[in-house]
Image 1 (cartoon, helix red, strand yellow):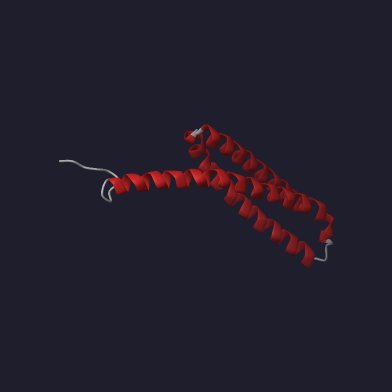
Image 2 (tube, rainbow, N blue to C red):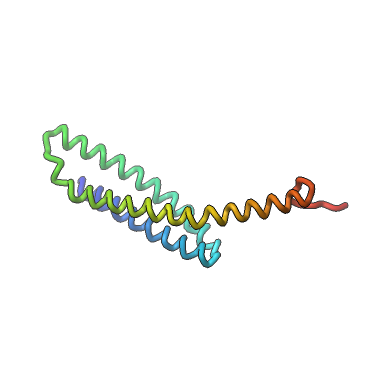
Length: 125
């Protein structure tokens, strides 16, 4: 049961890492449509990871209270933690690409707004 949960977490994390790598490529190519299509999938995957992590913690706690030596799962959990670290680093890489682009768009919008007297769109009647 615990092994299955760890395997599920590893699969979910691998899928999310793949999606983030695809996001990085699509940001570089300015392929916004694919980015938007993956957002919902990534959100669902993140929720699934959180739920599976909570389940894993519960399962480990139950086994521990039964007197089971849970160190038998140490290697699998260490591997999972490494995958989660890699995911965190990839997410940071994506953020380092996206945030400057976001800031550039904000500056452009601010300049347009300022040029139009405080309004983004200039309406003429």
